[in-house]
Length: 120
Image (cartoon, rainbow, N blue to C red; front, top):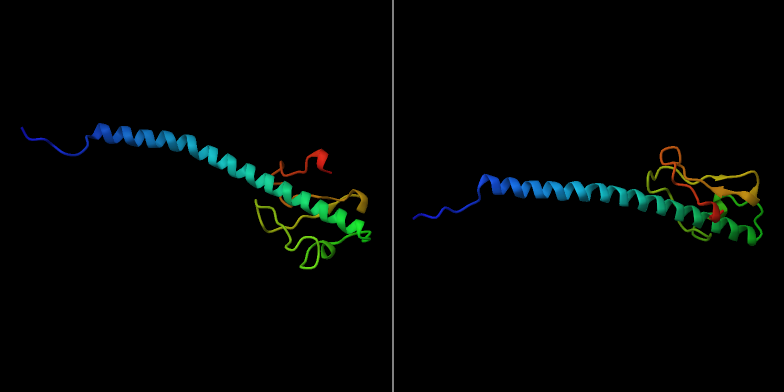
């Protein structure tokens, strides 16, 4: 009796089905984790900017500008950008320098990139 070597079509189809099921589970989780990581990095950037503004005000700068915050000799060495889209910088919004808060430049595209109320 001659023994055949190789796989049958059914065995190959079952393996492909299992790989497809695993990919269907893993890919959405990966995409969700990536979006969450981008959101958390953006919020951390805004917290760092807020801290730098507070430090500049404590050192006597009444209305800190970007040139007072970013630079080699300032509080933040390299200007941070939102990881969603690295094209824009974080604008400071508020009525005066006492209530300035950084906002995400991409808040129209990703509305969950906002500082929590307790952080401001």
